[in-house]
Amino acid sequence: MVKGGSFFYIFALYHLMVNLLNTIVGTYECKVDAKGRVLLPSPLKKQLASSLQDGFVLKRSVFQSCLELYPMEEWNLMMQKINKLNRFVKKNNDFIRKFTAGVKVVEIDALGRLLVPKDLVNFASIAKDVVFSSAVNIVEIWDKDLYEQSIDDGVDFADLAEEVMGNINDDDNGIS
Image 1 (spheres, rainbow, N blue to C red):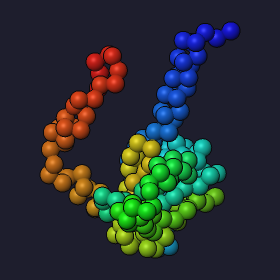
Image 2 (image 1 turned 60 degrees about the vertical axis):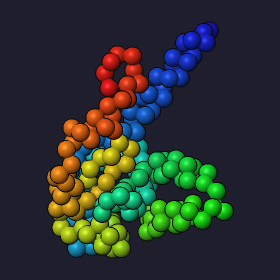
Image 3 (image 1 turned 180 degrees about the vertical axis):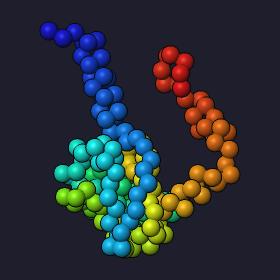
Image 4 (image 1 turned 120 degrees about the horizontal axis):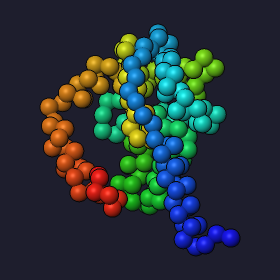
């Protein structure tokens, strides 16, 4: 028999593990071929293995000139949030239209390649060298030169980290 406190502990532990499993880690450099296909690096493919069968959504980034690769499960969670917006509010309608502009359902083929549609290749100015960069639960896909520029944008990362994360301490252990 499970006592109430034990149940909640197990429930919390389960959700922590699920959230950790959905975290994608790493930055990988690849080449894109003339047809817009990119071979997923093996470590990234292993992390996305549970999502391979369901497929992915590839879209334009809102804030950067890159693409965002959503595992279908993550995309569905995002759509649940967006679906709560009142479509009788013009700003909401405009946002939904722009957020979903150019969205494509994509799959990883049997050889482990991702075909990036031409319109998205053009949006992200992808030439030859590509960077896959983890962004917690999605993957950003960048032209390598644009990725390097975004990292070296002159913003002091220490100041940014303090401003964004400095007041967050969800644990009682004093570690942010």
